[in-house]
Length: 501
Image 1 (cartoon, one colour):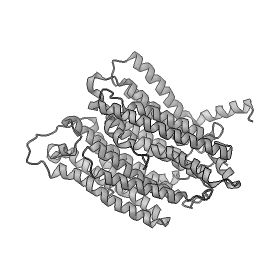
Image 2 (spheres, one colour):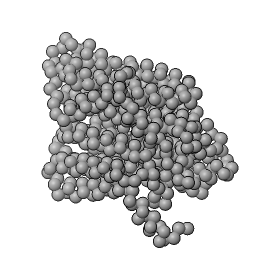
Image 3 (cartoon, helix red, strand yellow):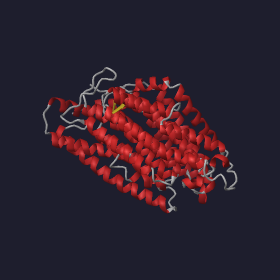
Image 4 (cartoon, rainbow, N blue to C red):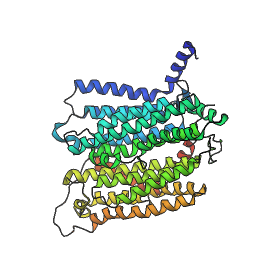
């Protein structure tokens, strides 16, 4: 039992590296106040949230790393730093994207609460990225989930948005129940909620394999829901199609990043005894082949995502299944269960941020002008808006994984990590799925440049901030497809998840 004085001292010391989260909390409180006082100034909360994200990023860079706090329930290490930067970059892009979103502008909608919930969700993601205690992990996931449920149905007068939000809540409640039940079982088996203490107990004590397997599987089910892994993906297509496109893009990157961060930390801290050497296999506690289970999960996820995407006509829904498929590719890196696999996951997420957010911005820019997200209505876009069509094509090539784009580098490092771990069959499945994805991505480009040329629909004038942003993202997609060593070095340096001993 820890003494009260030591508890207070531990909490005070912990606050010294909890500053990014405190910046977000202060920003959240400020947004609530400004929304009440300056309600008529539409984008004031957007600018304040941007400032908050920038300040949180600055604090992330200057504070010390490799520290445990709050009674070893929270850690700030290079691994969590990487994911927090991904989350902040996504937030900045989404806020800029929202400034020109027709969906959010309609009916004179007040946007103050939109940015408030966005910051609240970011705070939850920050907690998820650094949590090492199962209860904190659960509370952090719930914090980000509640905000995401509201944001998914933010355009509540649109029927499909309300439907999306309701489905999101129902599936979220089920996955939350499964996870908390698994946590209770694991606590009953080990007597601890701290991941490292759980690992040490499992390594030194003999327990029944079946209840341990069931409890771990239930916890992983909660994580699989956040990353849209099959068979916990059912919410994804409907939510992605019904939610405002800004939130669809946000969920496809930031929410998925937080889910993979906690999944990797749970596997390494709670279920393995890893060695210090980079790339060495993690020694999993118990008698369960987690690598094979994750490989099967990856296979099902990318195969279903790619095959079902073939029949989609709505671009948001197509990109939803594409997002499921990419979760499967990323799970391939997780299934390797070593630091090289973790590094490949980090590389993939950085590249995925650029190409996926860029693709969603292109869809938004065009859909806002033509009032449609149907692939057929994008026919002739190459002549109606050649710049956006060209940029969109670059991003689609990257999502396929063709050189010389960032998407090729992302898939190359995941496949290399899988082959190095002798999971050749999984790499073959990944390549086959990449070939399948070629069809529906090229179908979009076919409509833009080959079909609808004889119809005199007129040009689509697109200007503004988001056009500049998407051009920059496309340029970075090409740049990091050629000059990728800084990202690779950063990912390798961040792949070693800190362990409290």
